[in-house]
Each structure stands twice: as structure tokens, then as C-alpha cells.
Length: 93
Image (cartoon, rainbow, N blue to C red; front, top):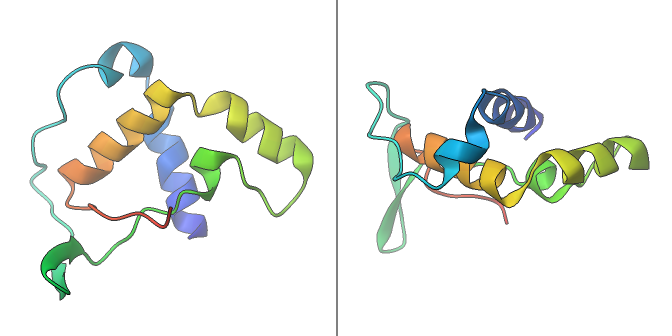
């Protein structure tokens, strides 16, 4: 899940995130995460960890506060839309 935190930060750090968050979701990317059957649905084999999005940090409260400030609703939506474009359609939260 630590890798997802870094990836989520990289995705959300792009300029104009707030302006694009209200746009329609990104089209599917050329590269897609493999899928697997989970009950009656298919989910991507990579699951989006949500600790950074909710501001949960196991290191200290300073990082938790910084993540809560950074991940506005617009940025969280952008991260989820970008992840979905690559076939990541499940999260831990």
C-alpha cells in the first residue's frame, strides 16, 4: 500500500487538478491492470490504498495533517478517475 500512496501523490500533484476534477473521467489508458473475478464482478488486481486520501499516516501527525490538507475532494476524485483509467477500480476504503 505504500507504493499506492506514492502513486496517488504523483497523480494528484499535476497542475490544474482542481479544474479537471469536475471533468468527465479520463478515457481508458493504453496500459491496463489485469483483472480478476471477485464474486459477481471483475476488479483490477491492483487495489487503490486510501490511507493517504483520508490523511492516515503511521509516521506522525504532521504528515497526517499535510495529507488531509492536500487531498481535497477534487484531488481525491482526480486520483480515482486516473486510477480507473488504468483499470484500478477497487479501493481499500
